[in-house]
Image 1 (cartoon, rainbow, N blue to C red):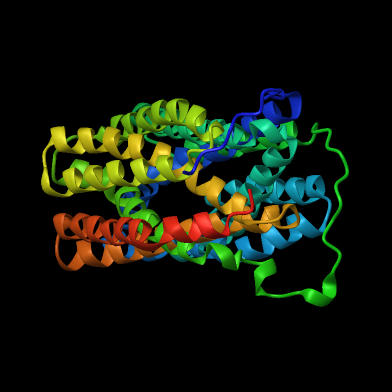
Image 2 (cartoon, rainbow, N blue to C red; image 1 turned 45 degrees about the vertical axis):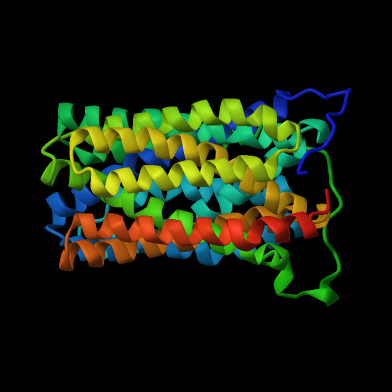
Length: 399
């Protein structure tokens, strides 16, 4: 059984430092999600970019985030975490100014790609600090609640961005808003009061396992499959809704329903995570998400569009914190940053491939082909989890 008895002396959950990193994470994803759903439209409207060009341009962000993540985990484990966090977060904020001055498609592609590096490192550093400041008895539960900051940002930001764009028809307003909100997050993190923690100092044993948690390789592969599916949908949902379903602005409600499902399932799932039901949560979430992606692919109408958003949200809200706990439970404390970066590396690879492959499939076939491809890849991940990954995790977990 994948359960453990609850500690009768639970420590505090919402301590001062945890609240600060929670809010700072909200600001990261709020500024990120203000732009992400609308960037395909921005590239099409401003630079007349084709669908496969849009996929190539936007996948660069994810690619660089992927490349920096292994080093982010290493630096977080090897140097003072607050210093690493502030440097990464500060660079993430500053890069939003680059969009304001990108006057060509090439320059925009360069700025967008480079922006992936501080995003990838800031999310690793912030989430690792969040785990550090949680009481050990509330860690699994706290990881679940931490993700609510992402979900709330993903619910509010796209709707607000679309409303602002409809009112002023000026993308620069969104770039400025992203810059300001991320700067607020940086200011909040600068007030963190963190205890000094022992750093990894064994430089002689520098190996690949310091950059990616090798024990989590199978979990990482399944996460890539789930991220691939999400990458296809998240990138093309706005254009698909506008061009095929004729529901201009429908992406706002889509992401709101998606985030509603994420929030509801996280609120329910955090209690069972505290009871140690990690595998059960992951299994349920993956299965529900698989249904959601199929609904989105085969029901090409507004009902399927919005119903799939809620179903996928309910599934991913159970799956993501459970999978993150699986990575953390496979790693010793000295590799907490590496474990954190490993799941994000896996997610980045999947999203990047989904964005790139999705663009090619849409350009040369159609949207349904792209969304069916996303479902098939998701099915491969779910099958692998039930066939191998669950047993591997239970055999190798440390706690």
